Image (cartoon, rainbow, N blue to C red; front, side, top):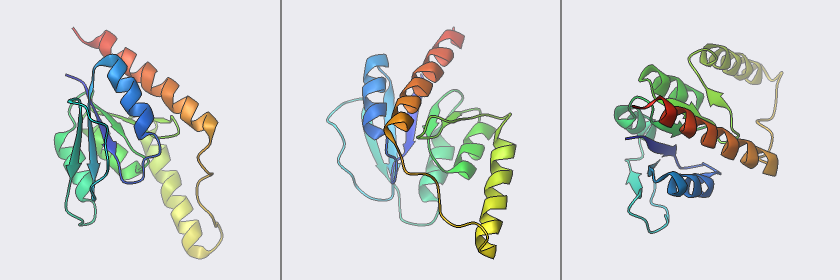
Length: 151
């Protein structure tokens, strides 16, 4: 059964995921390094992992299966999930796929290098209302696609 995993520590769309998951009757697993308040629901689970680097990522990769959805802004985590045939979606609605993850990883490395050189400064644009809307549309479309493909 399709599950949604959230890389939860800095995810700005948790409430949107909860609403969509409730509508489709899907389980949601939030994975975090710290405890956080979650809605009271049998379908929402909080998995707190130890604070070591990448512990949440490792837990998600170990548990997300084919066609599960992982919500993350972490590009290397998205890539690892795609290797397990899970789906990956960024909080701004960008779907990570096996066809685009290589280019996204390369761009990430180039930007990191430019930042190290002091050439590029700053980070991603602030999260906006249109990002939330795009995310909701992408998540809904992804769930519908997966459900259509299931027997």
